[in-house]
Image 1 (cartoon, helix red, strand yellow):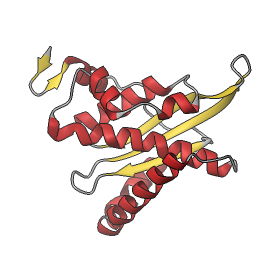
Image 2 (cartoon, one colour):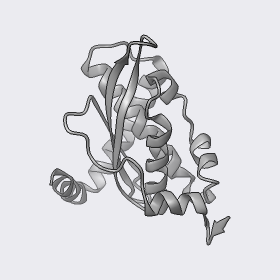
Image 3 (cartoon, one colour):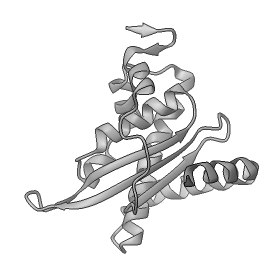
Length: 170
């Protein structure tokens, strides 16, 4: 069912977002933004060893997003989808997976699902590099693309980003 341009699921995640907030002492942090629309996302992860599986899982994941309905809904959805997954499983979540689980997104808002997957990729990249663990080639390439995009965003919005960081520090 659609409400205007958004599905019922998008509205549900916007009105009652899952996993919103900041993790104290996160193991990884991902920050991404879109220069055109102004959306900015921070995604925080905690990683623990799942002894039964013998793999590291995302034991906790939270987000802080400055953005539109779709940006908040996609942030909420990716955290719901990734929580409890192994790092490898979480990195396989695609923008199409997010949009499908949300019951679709308007074409003009599909970039929000890209931001959500990029924020997760950056948080995992941050975790792996901090812990001197191997970074897969595809994740390194994704990180380079995001880093270049953020440089452009930060150069054009220095004052706004300083304001955001002060607000998030509270």
